[in-house]
Length: 322
Image (cartoon, rainbow, N blue to C red; front, side, top):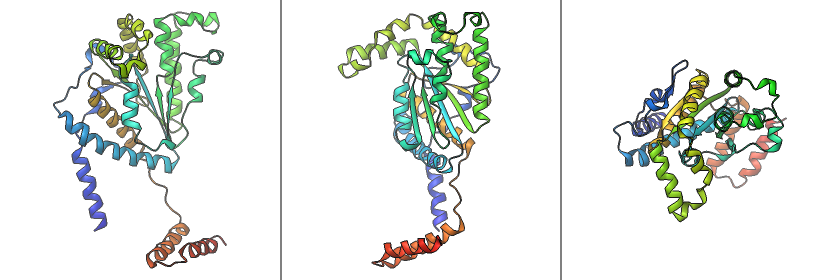
């Protein structure tokens, strides 16, 4: 009866979720990519309130269960890369999708402008330092991809300490190859990688930046750098398209997620992460026969209501450790 009840609950929760074919947001390996061809708005006929209040809740519960299994198994790791234009919703996505998980097993790293120490190393040094442990989820708010996009937009490579003879016309192709090799290496060592580009429209970005100026509660988010970067919109779109095209692989795919509707963005991201978790298929570790026998003894003590229950538990443990 108990097993039937659990299965019924699983079916009910599954039915609550709005089904999304996330594969249509995935950049296929070897495919020519132009961000202009990908939607920035919700491209499904779904009820907003139902997704926010019902489907998203069910998705987060399922995600929490998978994370518990991932953490307990302590074998695989998951790396989630978030890249986007300014004001596309990276922080909000992290808050609404991942804040419900056990913080012991989730590590968020935001990569800002490289420090002096970081510039004294190769561009992947700070990324390697931030990799999650086995059993954990690592979320990168911006990432190593800054070094093939922002660095190019502003010609920052000229100010790096990389040997000048290595700065040639092939340097970006070289970096793409290095990144593909590095991500394949991690995947082959049990660390799954999913990369998500939050695809916001130029009009929506304008409105969000304006909101940061006009709304006092959001003034803290405002940065003049965001306004300046907007001048390079077309260049960023071209480079992000190239970046995704060059580095989306079977082992480390890119997903181009519509970002104009925050509620839809967050739900799509939850489904992408769930798919990655299902691919990993983590399981709670199997208990040894000794531990199972001890649990049975503890259950009997608890059900009996014995006042000396704790002491008897200790006796059982001592007996099992002889």
